[in-house]
Length: 219
Image 1 (tube, rainbow, N blue to C red):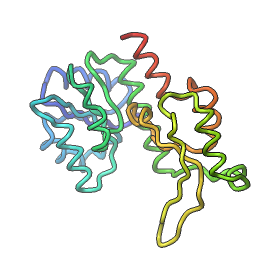
Image 2: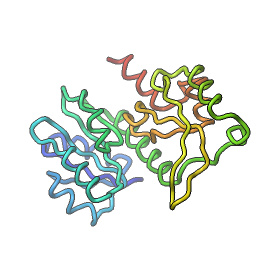
Image 3: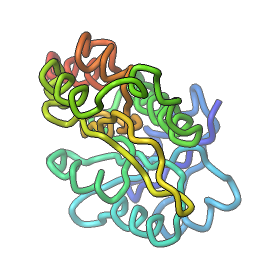
Image 4: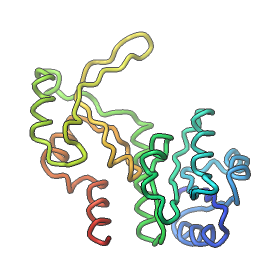
């Protein structure tokens, strides 16, 4: 059971979200971002559901506040009708997942579960570099994976990653930053074995691809 904070200016939507979320989680509600920010230190939520419409833009306000204050609590944006096109903008601000009206129990449960899983993965850090990466020409491996890519979201997205940490540089490794996984609240950073076995072999093993295809089939 996770702790969920619902922030939404519309009381009827707030009641629906609370009713759905409390079937599996502990839920606290706030009527706007200002109240929500005050509630966060008291409740320490695992996930925040926050509304967004063209007039209120509450999600954007909260995400900018989080970025300015280095708050890591994952945020799922609840979009009003007609605002789906804003997902990319809100993802860049830091949104980890999205819900769009009409919201059902299955949809909400899937997004919350995926967001919690992605947050756990992000906090635990990336998997160890594989022996295959250590013993291969990474440039050739990168080209081969891009050539074999089956998932549309990963086309030409495989790259060699190396980070500067504490004055030293990490060993170069194969990585991919997936925009589709970010859209569904999953950790966008995936690494060699996942790229090889899922992105390049069977994308239907990826939760983001499964949710994307299911949404297209029901549209």
